Image (cartoon, rainbow, N blue to C red; front, side):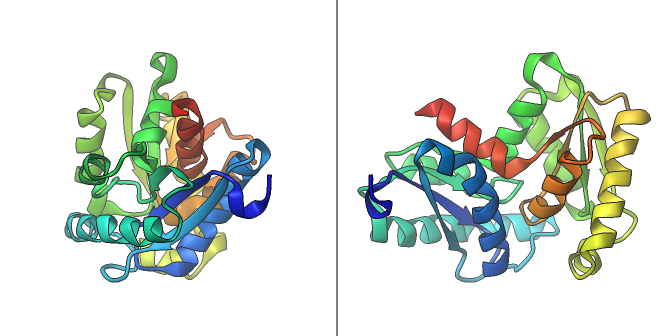
Length: 224
């Protein structure tokens, strides 16, 4: 099958940051390429470059449908699924109601993967302004019984984005606290822009680390 005719998964980045989109597409390909699926990213045309609070999350939801429509206009006949690639899944439900292909969110997918089999799970992230939204998402997906809580990095998200080595270090420390102090059996590195850090921390062997973008891609494969 040629590259141009392969079934396509559209990855919609609600952050208006094309570099983050490229990172997540690269991560997604490690799951999809071996099974013959292509992935293409589309970035929100406006809104926050990094979602760091509830207001950002709400604002970005309005960009998701427009971004997805732009992506579908180019390759609608090949698109077999759409992934909303911000951890709070902004606009996922509205988009799912507007299109005829499955729509999954990286937050939704991570929660399902982390809580599988009744596991106790936690989250490690950089964004204190999203704690309330993430806790609400846990309740909305009915996995609160196994939720061990959220551990935050000491440094904020904007500063860490400019210092990837420190970001990896502080996220790994937060994940270790989930495992060692909170009794988590799995830990989600909660954030689409944290995909690179999540990949590296998962490879470190500290425990079962759930990476949001690969979790969403596996969910797409399960729904096919």
